[in-house]
Length: 481
Image (cartoon, rainbow, N blue to C red; front, top):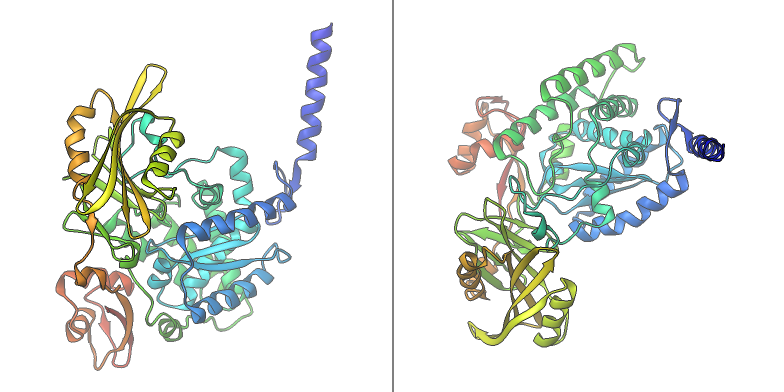
């Protein structure tokens, strides 16, 4: 009888836990099992926010920040969870994305702000993200799945032994990249329509913006951070559904006018950085350049690459090797070398002091053994301008011989960046222009001296086709320095 009693006791405990974890969903009004209280949810957001800000950096534009804060607070007040202390931030990333984490923290990349073409588009996406917070989607999804790591590079899966050398994402960034199911996304689309309409915006514009995102995704593929459409319903279904919901909302509403506010929004983003910011490092002619750190080195031929605030990563298509650049701790090369050995639990094989293009360096070979697998590391520590750089190549020991020349070639071409053009490289910024007469969008780009190879990119930035006809006095986006 004892096992049966134990079973009954266990069942009782599980039932009590389930009951204690039940909560009323603020949006649906229905009970649901969650494993986190509101206080815990808010605490998670407060912990995650500085990690997300540290990863991306904040974009410095007081006028634009004031705008999203004002609209965010206005919309939060009419949401299903108005008592949360919401925060709305623009992060310094060119990727077209918006996301929210528990507790009311909502983020827009400068990339998505650049691609909005009116306030109504922004308001629809703002409502969508507040909808995720209102419906506690992050909390529910945490119940349903473990957090995953961001992939090293689009289309590349590292062999498991190499994954540990990739800088792990913080909890905050894992939350930022948490994927929701399609039902959750549809619910947030509906809330985006509801919330943006309630504060007076034309939510049909939200559907039009999704069409722009679809075109952008088709042209460029996945970016460093999964794009806004990556986990959402199919674009065709989504556009049509959002448009139907918006029109139905307007028909039932007693409101007679809904704002779009195109010109006022475009003037707000005049001068916004668009695309990669060279000061964060950039790749050109198969080499990596960092104007702020004043360093450069080549990327192995045919290797993919990814630039994050923690690491610059490079890998071949088969994923069985990786090279990484990071800043190393320590005041001396010896301290930095010991820190690398300790961090990755490496056993030294050999170590030599060298001078690499006039810079003091240590190059060492070390092994990491895990059960029957041995991973070999070629690690270089290079001292320059007050920093010590760790440029490391890693592969299975059985393949190390074929990769060692590639690793060494990259390491020994690490050098100070002296090219004044690259040191002073300026980012592209949005410039708002007034169309002088009736013409096509392509003719307007030609009129303002835009290069032909960028016409399609600029058309996407404007949410238009090159053949679209523009009226005299219409505002459009072009780019310049």
